[in-house]
Length: 264
Ligand code: SAM
Image (cartoon, rainbow, N blue to C red; front, side, top):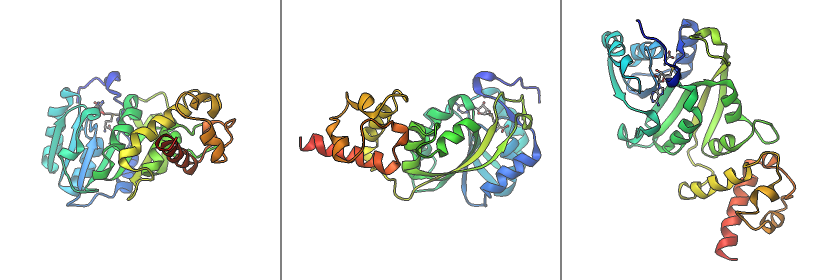
């Protein structure tokens, strides 16, 4: 296939069959399941999955890849290709039932963080996600408090999902090889997110403010958005940094901030 990989689409194609089979082994797709692949590219993962399930959906932005993809996958089953930007894609248009979709993808690394936020918003229709991402992003997704990589992405993802890193892969498994190491991660939306859906916006705003300047204390980062007395009342030292707060502390802080504005 004579396609020149495009950097702007984050195209690093998987070329190592053992890695492909290992990823698909973790997904363990079964006939009858609604599998959706993000960025099928030249079909490295698609062919392996389609052979097992017989029909699936895929969301691909690069038009030049669509025809060859349809051609190589056609004999293996029904592939419904959606030529769309996944950042704008409405996954609920595929299925309204709770937890009906299983998402898979070797994701374009250049959009991974906004894409994860876009997916969290639609977590109600997602049963699970298996993604290949830049290792550094997977480390941030799974990080716990006290770690240098613990930040906004860790908190926002972990209040709505369980995150399990599965294995790491070096650049040689791809064409062209990326400049970074990669990891495969499993993300399972929680049955009950730790923050209510209608409060996720204000929770996100608080977390963003808390991490606005990582080296600064909570007192400095939060003074514009809340009364610092709220922290003290909860027994949280305002001299701490956001990266030391547990998920439970973030949730308690958010709740107390809401209560303090409702009953000043
Ligand atoms: N799955 C293939 C593989 O493993 O070889 C390709 C993976 S490549 C890292 C990322 C794929 O995502 C490319 O096919 C690229 O064209 C596609 N892509 C990039 N940005 C996208 C977007 N915003 N929406 C949908 N697909 C996108």
